[in-house]
Image (cartoon, rainbow, N blue to C red; front, side, top):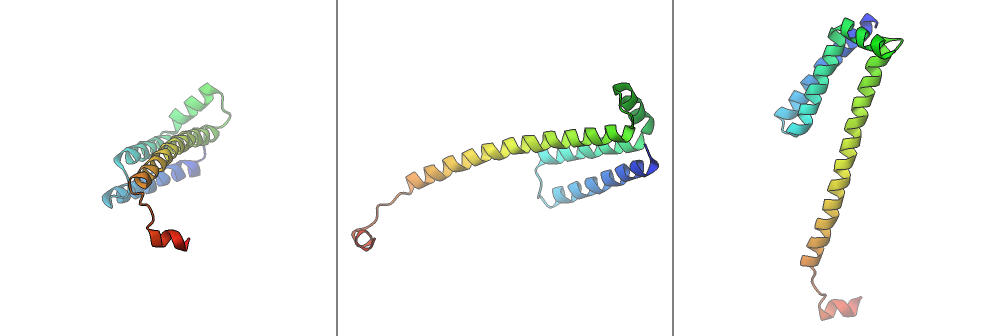
Length: 119
């Protein structure tokens, strides 16, 4: 794997870690999400900092280039995260719809006589 890729991975990991810590301090990120991103950042750092490990795993699996292996693993991890967030959004959407319907039923007020004649 080229030296430029190693440097890019290490720099990216530090920038990501800085950004996650900044969001945690401002209370703009939940702890469960921050744990994922901190672990992901550590994983990216390890991939960039230990080239022999990446080369050995990539050649053992059958990749021609360790860089292809690194990018495939990163894309796979991010796709899994995207899928899990999609599931969370679907669940929250269902809960929101249920709550809106419940609030609408509880707060339903019949229109007065004057309002009925206008419409």
